[in-house]
Image (cartoon, rainbow, N blue to C red; front, top):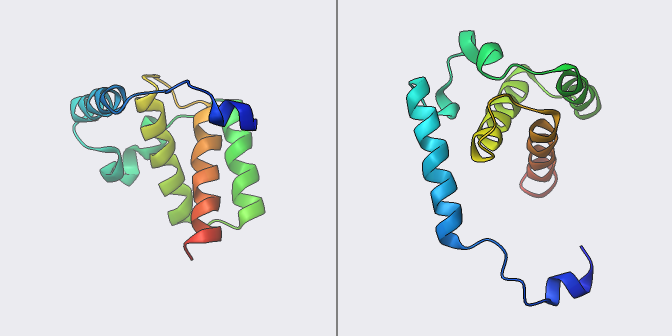
Length: 111
């Protein structure tokens, strides 16, 4: 992001707008019967179905980062949450890439 953009007067998204997105995402999750963190393993692939681009993104992350099966599943659950916040039905490669990015930040700065 350019310095001028950071210093500009644009206030961006308000806390109230973010709260509304979170409430909507939690409603979507409740309608499924569970929050994304608690998606049963047997339903994970169905609830977090990926298109070809998403599959490639996840495969590349698993290979490059040496992710365990547990980390793989956690990334899928996080991508599902990002998609819910975006009010998107399917999990897209964009949602998956964002989840992988958070995972790499987690590994680099909080380990």
